[in-house]
Amino acid sequence: MESINDFIKNVKNDEIDIVEHTYKLIEECKEINKEYNYFNTISEELALSQAKEIKKQLKNNDKNIKNKKLLGVAISVKDNICVKDVETTAGSKILQGYKPLFDAHVMQKVKEEGGIIIGKTSQDEFGFGGFSVNVGVGFKVPKNPFDEERSCGGSSGGAAGLSQKLSNHIALGESTGGSIVEPASFCGVFGLCPTYGRVSRYGLIDFANSLDKIGSIGKNIEDVALLMDVISGYDKNDSTSLNVKAENYESYVKKPIKGMKIGIIKEAFGSGVEREIEKNVYNGIEDLEEEGAKAEEISLELPIKYGIATYYMIATSEASTNLAKFCGMRYGAVEKLEGSFNEYFTRVRSSNFGDEAKRRIILGTFARMTGYREAFYLKAMKVRTLMINEYKKAFRKFDALVSPTASILPPKFEDIEKLTPLQHYMIDVMTVSPNVAGLPHLNVPVGFEKNLPIGMLLIADHLQEGKLIQLGSAIEKGK
Image (cartoon, rainbow, N blue to C red; front, side):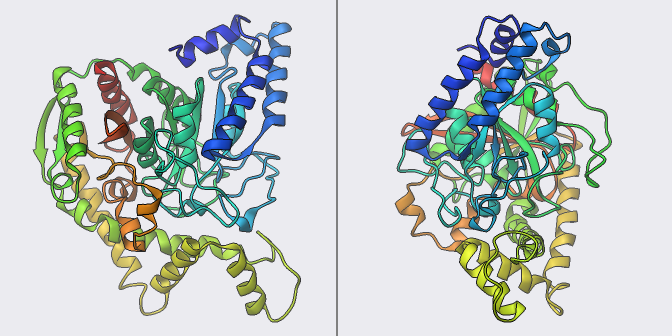
């Protein structure tokens, strides 16, 4: 299979007609979308205009064109990341018709490097879900690329599914509690969620400000590293952006891992984890050991035991605050101004938010109320600090920690319908804690059972994305 770097070289050498290629790619996206529902919007007009501009610059021998890192590469964008003049809804009816007047910081960077924006991928409404079934009113549920009766994970479900189906493509995903790595696991692709603040959130439609992170999803680790090279870096428009030196993540691909130490999280195996998942994850650990890494068990009880409760208390509280602006006045859907403000506010939000969005708004509002804030939200923030300290202690000894990404194989939609909201939330049990702690983590495909993919989760210390790429590359090499 041709790598994206080979594809870029062919574009630069004018061996590929980028306009013709982009036209065929858009047609392929339309066909895939008819069957799998991976796009909320296909940005055909934008993609072709970008391709024509690239072709024009190549023809004119523009001196800068051949230095662009993503020249001609198809980039899909999760629908909660703003793309100028392209409908951006965060998967919610309340934002239908919204076309941003500006690009998110990551989009500016992608466009500057010659990436071609092919569309906005489907997701759970505002990122509220682990299966991509909580789509907004009027949106379609994306389907697993290996079995259309099953979930492709959430909330970046469309991004991960498309990454499995489409060649010469990398996806921009976003994670709050596992929404990059979990769908990557269910779809058999690589997904890297970076350190909180490593990638600017400017232009991202908020779920939870202290948790949201933009990352990359791709068919192989080299593609993921390439997109991370482009989107990482300081942004003065984002107060949480880290002003640290940029790294060349591609340099970690195929870098030897001999002597690296891996901690196997004891509490992430056993009860509640399907046997096939355990077997394949341990096979992945063996691959790392064969490449020279050393692995041993470590106990991390706090993140596994209290991760879900801590995450949902923080996330729903922040979501409740962020979604308050969609009141039918300045932002979001509007209706005829009738009745009192409370009546109008209630009518707009009741008819435009889905059930899960309403549930999380209510939970978060309750947790922030006078008399409950200290008992719930502030206590969760204290537990977050304890979790970070426990991870930091582990990273004094280990380069990375390992667990399954998801405890189950991709479930059928009919089985998901039977789950309670709490059972929905438990799908994130492995992934919420690194998100709460702001740690970088990577899904690595490690095998198949019943023709369904299984993912292994690698977690590293803050700003150690390179180590994750290094380890992920070693496993990919062994497959």
